[in-house]
Image (cartoon, rainbow, N blue to C red):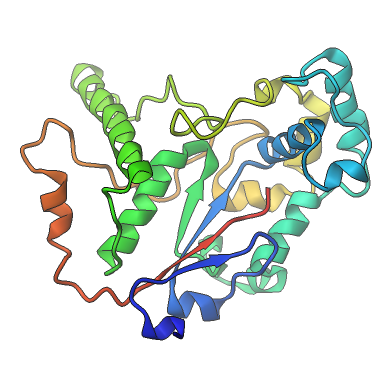
Length: 274
C-alpha cells in the first residue's frame, strides 16, 4: 500500500539518503543530532576497533584497545586522523547530504531549525528524554505509540526515576534541572551500547577543539545550541516530562485519552550519519 493509505506505517530513511519536505508532508519525521567533536571521536573509535568501511582508507586510527586512549592513540587521532583531507569537514558534508545544504542556507526563519524537514530532534547527548519527548509529540498529533514495547517501557521507567529525583531536589533547593549524574551517551538505556572510548575531552586539546568548533561544523553548534567541543548544550525546545511514578494517574490511562483520535500520521525515522 502507498504510505498515504496506511495508518501504521514506519518509514525508515537510510543513513545516506536525504530527508525532504515531501516526506515531511506524509509523515512525522524524527531525526538525531550529535555534538560534532563527540561524533568525530565516535567515528574514529569505531574504525579503531576495525569496523566500518572508512578505516580501510584512512590512517591514524588507534591500536590500544579497548578504549584507544593511550598517548600514541590520542596523538594519532589529533594529528593524523583529524587532519586527513577525507575526514576534515566530514560531519558537515554528511549533514548537508542528509538535509540539503541549499535549503538550509536559504531559510529566512529566525530559528534555523525551521529550515529542516524534521519535526522533532533526538539529541544523542540527551537520548532518553528527547526520544520520549519526540514520541509524545508524535502521539499528541494523532500517531500511535506502543508504550508496552519492552524498549519503550524501559525508557519510560528509567526517565521517570531521573525526573522523580529531580523533582525531589527541586523541593529542597529549587533546582529544576534533571539529574544526569549517572547518565552517559554511551549507555542511554544501560544496555544498548558499550563504552568504546574515554571521555571526549581527553582527546581534544585547545587547537583541535577550535579546529572543529570554528571549522566547517560551526553551523551545527550555532543551529543546535551546542556550546563547545565536547561541551554542553543550551536547551532549544521544552521537553515533555513523563508522569511521576508516584502519581495516582496511571500512564496507560493518560495516553488512553488519545485513542479516539484518527491515527492518520506516520512516523519516519531518519538516522543521521555517524
